[in-house]
Image 1 (cartoon, rainbow, N blue to C red):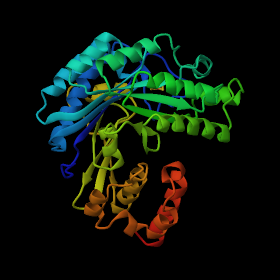
Image 2 (cartoon, protein in one colour):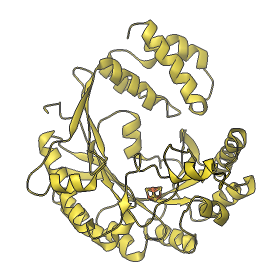
Image 3 (cartoon, protein in one colour):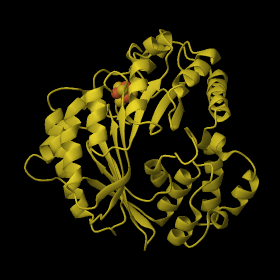
Length: 379
Ligand code: SF4
């Protein structure tokens, strides 16, 4: 692979969880039960990162993100990876986020993160409502408030909280209470997701058997909109489909995805995208969702990940798809430099039809009209 060296973000997939939630589809969030392979994984993923930096001649890494899975189940062992990353020339991220769950975000883990150069924690709250948590097999909330307090103490105004709506047995009061209890710890950023049921998950089975009943589509939308209003009323800007931030606290790493600026992806199921700005094309590589395959690949030497080409048309469509997830739309400067035109010039009819409308709330409809227009225009 000899793509131009433009990838300057790094995503690391940590593929272990202490238990499985019923809605996890083991594909978008590939994970296995935490076991004694964690140490070996941490050394393998570091080898992988070194290998990719060389392969892509990637230069400076300006944002980094360890997601999962549940990276906090590594506990203090995360230190090994964080210390190793510091030795890489060019690794000086402006923002470095690590995901955590309340059950494992303890002092040992948080101090390892702070000392290791992590600047931001993303913690999965989802809901405080026990009946909803039980229905999707999420761990009990026992230590939730204590752990949120700890995270806000270690990372004051530098953490994000994930909340979820559309859960079984969830009422509007429960959503408003989740927002209020979470905001009491002053997160700088909140992600508000609406539950989606993936095929083949334990949750889908439970719904088929009617062991679990989800709110209908209208009710689920109403719950999400109630959460959105509460966040906006509290001063959080709704800047991306599911993301809200206090002024100056948007997630830089994710903004780079939404602007299609290119990133390296390390770990099983991780994918990376290396943009060739000159030709407006990209290379996309994805590791198999298979921890053993991954560990074997980095045991003695390296196995290159599978690679696919995104031609100009595919990169154009993906840049619109990702860019319009954000309130401000695609970054015009990057878009024009890459494709030689602005988004308005590519899809003028669609943009005119949607002027002054909240595209983020109806993204799929907007995109199907935008792509049809691109097809008509032969772009
Ligand atoms: S913690 Fe996250 S990755 Fe792990 S099983 Fe639950 S939803 Fe999936």
